[in-house]
Image (cartoon, rainbow, N blue to C red; front, side, top):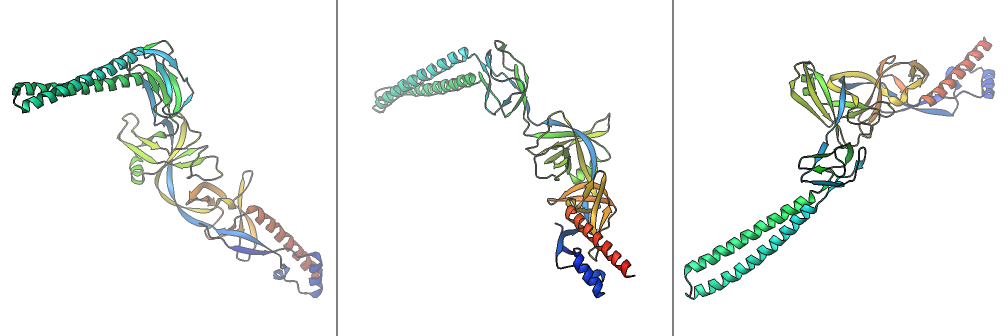
Length: 385
């Protein structure tokens, strides 16, 4: 953070005090201040190490873009959503007639009951045969038959339960739900249409997770791999890694994926930039500006709040060692965000170590007081001469 200090600047004397000083013959520049002072918060221009970036255009795409298809056969009974509708995860988007699936479910339930009955009978028979077998009344072959019948009854029950689970799954597939929250982009079916497994029903995208695809020239790909850092510039962003008061905001990407093979026609590498969740104002298919970090450089910076802008003119209020304020025109570069501090790059008009006022409005008022003070002082000196 920029360290601040207070500069005490004298206010102009009242007319009565000025006349008394003239009569006393003790008028000196340092004596023009009274006990009322203004305190200005200041900071020093400093050299900051910043990243060197290469700008490229990219295209936004959704990470989650899915076409939901039918998983069972049937006729479309009802369609709940249409294009541009927002759908919550798990909400039903279409419903198939389920007469066949309901019948299969009832058949499977009956099969389970029948298998349970056969198993109960087999257990009773096995217990009876085992009791008489221990008394040496029946042959071992009968005991073996009872054990085989019991095992077969258990297997039939397991098979019936599996058929019941399959029937329940088939019935659930007649109610098609959204795999995630998002917007419907295409509707492929209408009520009354017959569908088979694999028939497309709806296409949708989620705007919660987006990424940007860019084509990077082969001369930059090694530096991109080395630094592994990139930014996306948006007009509107809802993230913490942004610079305040800029029309274009800078978002740090979460992950950068570099494809290993270059395109033969363009000699560029495809790079995918994953954006953090919560980005506002971006939609799939939009063009955005991006930047890859390709090195570091040193820039002269001041706090962004210290820059005064009037139309196309930019300036800062510089305070010298004597406490005098002067308005200095500067040429601005880009804005930076360093550890949450908004900084302004100065290309020319200022040197490292010079002191600038953090509040241009207050500094301008003090400058006007100084000018009036010097004007009165010069007039008094002229009258004395």
